[in-house]
Length: 180
Image: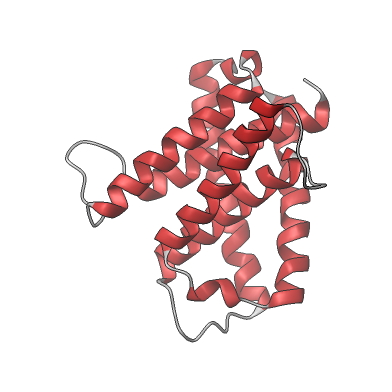
């Protein structure tokens, strides 16, 4: 588990660096997006990963690694939007955005550590394609909850699905980065 924690931290660094650079390039324009729009962005990325996995190649010169990073970062943005709400006033200072980003990534890591303990690192035996499929399933669940105006009868909420997607994408990134 200690190795997983260190590997997870290295993925946090990769994703956080990209988030920070994009914040400096684009600012916080993403604040205008509703969570349903962010869910659709994540869906597009997951569908592209699955398409590349099934076809064995891509015609656009970007592999699946960047798509997993995008899934992670969009999920964190969605968690921030759930907390703050979308806003026409998209101004969110870099330091505040980064603080919210870090808080949500730490929350995802804490959840991963608890679940990873109980599941005894079963994800390490999974195929990359299965992690993609689990993300797609979580996306379809999230879309259904959104279509139900956030109401569930017995299921976890939208935030729990975003957290799980972050962790599945981090596991995929660990498999890619560390060749495991």
